[in-house]
Image 1 (cartoon, rainbow, N blue to C red):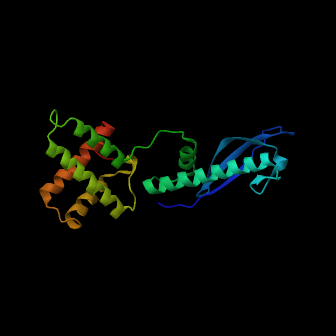
Image 2 (cartoon, rainbow, N blue to C red):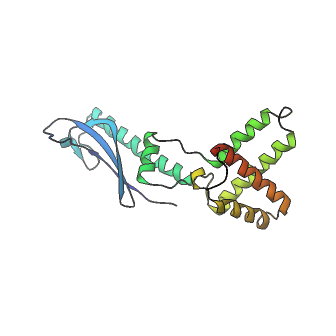
Image 3 (cartoon, rainbow, N blue to C red):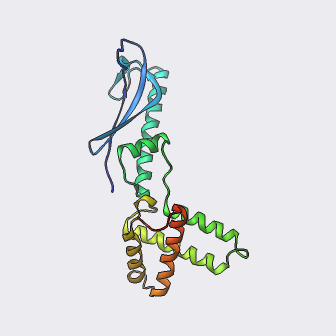
Length: 203
């Protein structure tokens, strides 16, 4: 799941280019696959060398400092994808960096939002013990994800039927929870995921 990545910033010359400033691009490479995006910076290609603008003037220092900020942002995006257990591709990292694409949906995040809604409806649509059971379920899920996948959350698109089977195995063996209680935790998990997908069933 953990993958290293390479990237470069470079001035991209358009077709028929002769002279003048051009847009600085970011190119990301993972598993020999590339994805790139334009930055908001422009630079004369002749002034770009070894990943930065040549010179010592203040405007040059400011330019290079901003490029360093973009590099830090890219590393942060990569770290976040790793922590969430998202399949890391060049395109996924680019989308995270630019903020484009559909926002991924994560199990624990959705589960906690679901529990928050139930809490507000205690005494109306739900009893307090029901809310408590869902709170306990999400706690077990968080511990299971750390035990099985070494992540704090997981993208819903990664869930397969085996996920529930593995979760059930974990509850019975690692936590020594009896069958009927385990079945309730599994049922709670399926309900939250199915409500999100609005189709029912795991892939």
